[in-house]
Structures are given as structure tokens and as C-alpha cells.
Image (cartoon, helix red, strand yellow):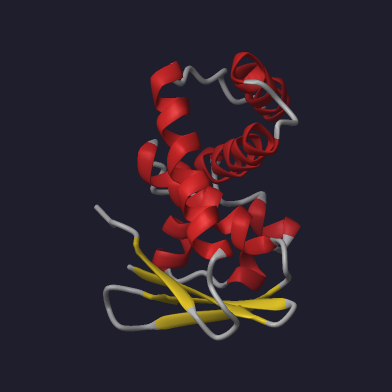
Length: 154
């Protein structure tokens, strides 16, 4: 799936073109591209095919994936992807340390009756470096410019 995030003044446009040539477009708030970039990094690295971008590839829209009633029906990978994406942003901002990263994730996932996760420290480091790189790339864009990414679908 091809993912394009276009920087707009005070907003951002997310466009996903699925492998069957259908597409989904969503107008996002100013902070969401970083969150979407975090999803992109962790879902690829952890092979979470049931996360945000995996669900977009299946045909869901951002509006559907923002609906709490729908979210409850999507299975544990969707919840795991959300929790790990937020934790990666926390790590990047300094709100948590690498040593606190797994505790931050597992404190939340166990509340959803999901088994605690184990992510190797080198994987966490690789995700952090890739996320920072994408955030910097996106930050360097001018209004109207885009970042294009490819999300592999198994």
C-alpha cells in the first residue's frame, strides 16, 4: 500500500492507495502525522498486520478506525499497535526512557487482557531511530509537499 502524507497549513492530508487501487483520504490535525508515522514504523517492524495501516489496507477508513465501537471489534493487534505507537512517541519526546518503554506498554495492554509484550531493546532502538528520521523528514517539508511511504501487505 502506498501512503502519502501531505503537509498543509495547520492540517495534513493522509492518502492511502491500496494494492487493489482503491484509496482512502483523510484530513488530519497538525499533530497526527507524527502519530501515523509512529504507526508506520512499529507496524512494519513488529509485523502487526492488524494495526492501523493493516486495517486501512483491508478497506477501513480513518473515521471508522476512530470510532470506539468499531475499535472494540478489531482484535488485539489493533490495540497493541495503538499502545506501542503512543509509547514510541513518548520515547521520542523524552516522556519515557528506553528502560521504561516496555513497562509503559505492558501496563496498558494487560488492562485489555492482552499478554505482556516482549520487544528486544535493539528493536526498540531501531524503531526509535527510524521514527526520528521520518519525523525530521516530515518536518523539513514545506506546505504542499509530501512524504511517500510503502506499507508492505503480506
